Amino acid sequence: MKKQAIKVLMLGFDERTQKTFEVFFRSTCHGDYIIDKTGAETSIAIVDFDAAKARKTVDELRQKFPQQVVIALSILENSSDDPYVLFIRKPLDHQALKQQLTGIKKAIAGNSLTTMLSKNKRSKAVVVKAEKPSASKPNNNEVSHTTAAASLMTMDDDLHFVGENEDVDLNDPEALQRISYAPTLRYQTMVIKAVNHARKSGNTVELISLRIGIAIDPVRNLVLTSAGDSRLRPVCMLKVEKADSLREITGDYNDEEIRALSKNNTQPLHSYSIESFVWRISLWSSRGCLPGSVDVNTAVYLNAWPNLTRLQNFPHAMRIAALLTQKPVVLRDIPRQLNISQRYVFSFISAVQALGMLRISQRKVDQTFDLPAEQKKPAPRSLLKKLLGRLIGSPEKQAMVS
Image (cartoon, rainbow, N blue to C red; front, top):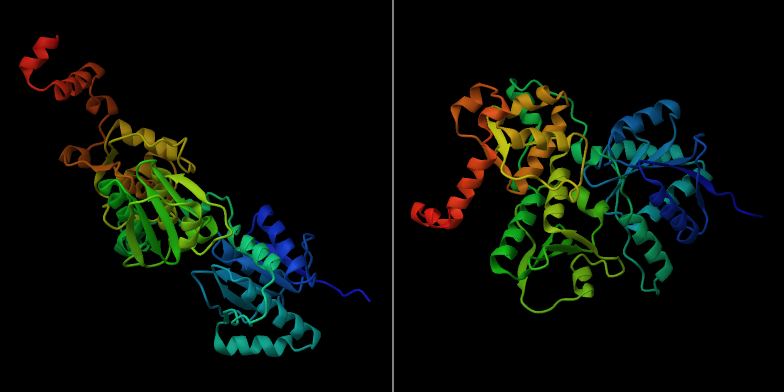
């Protein structure tokens, strides 16, 4: 008699990730589970709890199906007042997911699901860690499929970069506190320090922090890592005070050595320009919040144009860049002038600050008046003369070339 597969609803994952889960269910779980795309009630729902609007998704699911079990995958959360929500910490361990699914399947078969969930309610949280593997020979296909599932848990959504914070009253100190974050306590600063070290020394630098390993090559202007977005994005939200390891590589290095930094020997290498990597890490760290060192009442401008064709773009980034290259603008006024939400501006400010492009105007007039751009923008000829003067040197030398 053919066994009946348990239907599973997937929420917060893109199509590519769902296909990887299909392989995981079919191979590792021996066909015990199948993804249901009809929208009907299923026994289990698996949710990326770090995805945008994940809580709202779970709330809507609960209203529609009050007794559906939810497996929430998260690196940031580990508890819920809802007894039907069971957490598994990311990065996802395939054995942990299989263990949780097996427990639910047995509870359903034995009509003991309510008992299992009541235990969860008393403990407030079920954070599953995989049991230590036995001495038996591992299934190589199982490991490769499920490792791919973990690495592909990503969703190409602008909200990952700009968050979903609502606009706040910038005159309210408590509100300002809520939309501020400290880059110095994030993975972002570890990366920037490593980049600066590499550029100063001229040598490739290895950085290992939060089990993520990267190699920074200043000569080729590259960052290489086997950690995909699904691993990098969550760690950007975690507090980190110092790197696990930071060292220079004076000799040659190969792909296998870089993969070993993140213990992902089977994963493909991801290559970024240094600027694009720092930009992405900063956006994931900010997610619509403003670096605490930036005062909303100061006038800011850009000293260079960010190459948005080669950086992670998001809504309104081009408009913000265009405004801030024309003239200094009081930060709190930018959303109003462009008629956009604050989170887009705060994310942009975080990213350009990380790249060293943000400047604070010291002129009091910029803090007080919104002057037309042409009043502050130098004429092309005078700018050219200024640059030429710097290149040539003294007025006497300038006269010799004129």
